[in-house]
Image 1: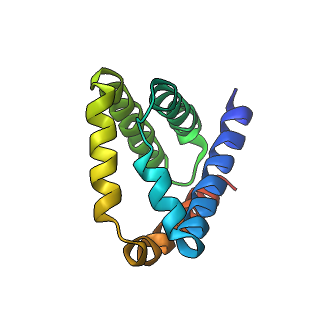
Image 2: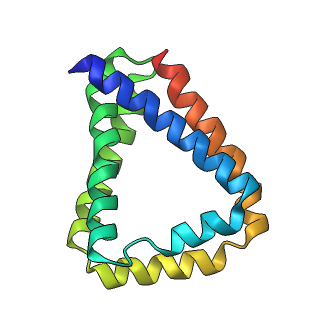
Image 3: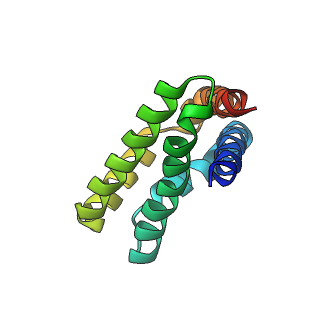
Length: 128
């Protein structure tokens, strides 16, 4: 179980790095993806459920990572916010996603991309 959690956390770090590069090179595409959050029942519940997988892996692997407190708090935070999103009506979730996508202009998305890349790298560093 711990080995599986380790690889899920590594894949999560790779996902964050990939998302950062998407934000850097294709900010309009990243913006469109943000705006689709909660747009259909399938997207809404798939998004929430899928994000709980790396969250659980962070909690499971926390004691073996370089920063166990960070992993544990981050994992539990993602789990808690996912549970909140399960009970918030999908239309409210989608309206908020559309609102955020409108605020995030392509240059701002591009400007924040290094944070995703660095955070993904940090996650991998803590495991390897």
